[in-house]
Image (cartoon, rainbow, N blue to C red):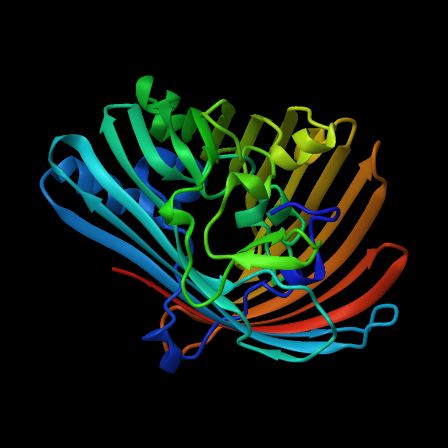
Amino acid sequence: MSSPLPVPAARRASRSLPLLAGLLLTDLLLAPLPALAQASSQLGDQAEPQQAALEAGGYKLIGQLETELNLDLNGRRGGRRGYSDLFNKTELGLYLSLPGGFAVNSVFKLEPADRPVDGSDRAFHAHAAWIDQLYLSWAQGPLQLFAGKIHPRFGMAWDEAPGLYGDDFAQGYELSEKIGGGVNLSLSDLLGATDRVGQHSVQLEFFQADRTGLSSSLFARRWSYQDGQGRLRYSARNRRAYGGPDNTEGVGNWVASLAGQEVPLPLGELSYTLGYSSRRAGLDSLQAGTAATERGSVAGLAWEVPLPWQLTATPLVEWVRQENADGLRGLRRQVLTSGAELARGPVSLAYVYEWMKESGTDRAQAAMHTASASYELPWVDGLVWTVGWRRLREEGQAANDYGTQLSYSFRF
């Protein structure tokens, strides 16, 4: 997912704008419904039903789906004219509890595949469907084990940053589509203090990039590579020859993290995350003689604060530093996401500032201001309309982009 800048134009176009009810039947999108073993970073509102399903024993299927219809109007940059991009993002998450504390967890996605931007208007261009997560978990008391195609826990801004474009930079360091396993230990459950101190857990995971058949996609090819003549090509399935950090033999890549949710404070509740990652270089860096193990650190927190007049403010900040970023010796990358959301009833306003700097082998810097407003439409539960703006400056150029999104979600 990484590139010289965490938010290349094609990826920026893959930010969501939800879909109409008529498209829901075919393009259902679920905001990732993670498994109990990874609850502390992704479970959200599904934590309690999953816990209840697990404790009840036997077989029980629960899930969540979300779908978005997005329209981005991207401003002119340099010699490239402005263009529009109409696209859908859909996610379906399913959780099946089994006897003995076991569960099968899965997430299916439909999103636009990464494609170079040439300034042409787009409508539902190069959409791909694939299995994003599929793993077996086992839980006994505060201990949880899991293995399969997982989503390692590193940071939270890629999921929690508010607004239409608030997580654009953070998506550059999100770890997804890995084959491996891990262990999660709930410290608060171990001490029997969850009701008093909130949820706290440590998690350790070992993995490699998914190169199995689960990396394959339908409708469009997702994995880019250069052929013998240097031409850009796309494959439906990932290969080790395509390179990239943690696209290695063996599960020698790992992430250790500590995270907390619903931590009570004198005023409001706190969520936080701390993490450290180690990812080995891929074949591209090895062949170029620039190979080095990427070391990443992340720290983030979000504080939900009740205010007068039925207002709720949620400031968020997250910082990431990567040494030998992308497995390239000497490349250092820093990413900052900071902002806040202000909500009252069905209306919410959000502002986020994002900043990225690379130094060492390559030098680059980008900064972005984003603002958006959302309204929960009264006609259907789970239907939200959002409008947003971003001003992105990168490579010495700045432009304004505008977008709108219609999203729909429900749990079952």
